[in-house]
Length: 354
Image (cartoon, rainbow, N blue to C red; front, side, top):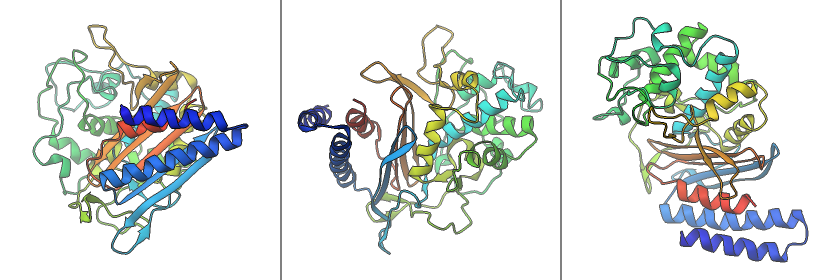
């Protein structure tokens, strides 16, 4: 909290001396850069990329540190590929929204309408509940989070498909990635396309996200960062192919920032389906969960809408922040496991949202 207050004081001081919008933006970036360097140093992050765009145009995009410390390969926000971790869920949600627009999926239908052979549970649940973490699918257990076993998306179901639901759907909220493995199988079945091809055709190509792709564990991918679990120590290998929908994509900070503007000025999905994924769901009790489908839903201190998602994976900590009213998107990607991104995201918000 003290850091946020200090940031706001500095920003107000700069605003007081600024006479026109251009210097104001430059001063905001100067403050943000200083905070970013401090954040990187404090958390001992080897490499980080930050991109900020307003009205669809980049106003700040910068790399910090190294994609490969040993070889002194510097981070480039338009080239360096990071694991975006659970920001993948946001890409999945927009793909799902397009299937809704195409009348290929009904969010309020039972998942068994699409996967009739999925093992029956005590309770039925819908696609909407699944996407909103309300279906009762369990979280990772044991070493599943760091599993280094190459599996297809369909094979990934074997990890949990025979387990009971951990609660009656919509009675509780339990954030998890395994539910998105099931969701991606539903999307494959409904579209008659492999999930990767579906996302590529539906979202990546139309938005010109040329540097966003699956993280293939058995391939050398140009510009992919090394992944660290602590300073100068590499993370253990992990296979994310089966959980592509929930946390398996690689991307650059500039690509993800570009993606964020689809949630502000939609070009590939309708306003109606956009509302479906960015409206907080509710429990049976009526309480809001603060999560739609693939996006957390909050308000800024000004009371304007804010959509966001954080990501945490092996060698990855990330955050995507979207501000529709201000037409602003902020993306931060790092190559380190276990970095808390919320406070830093709030600090950047305090700088760039007037």
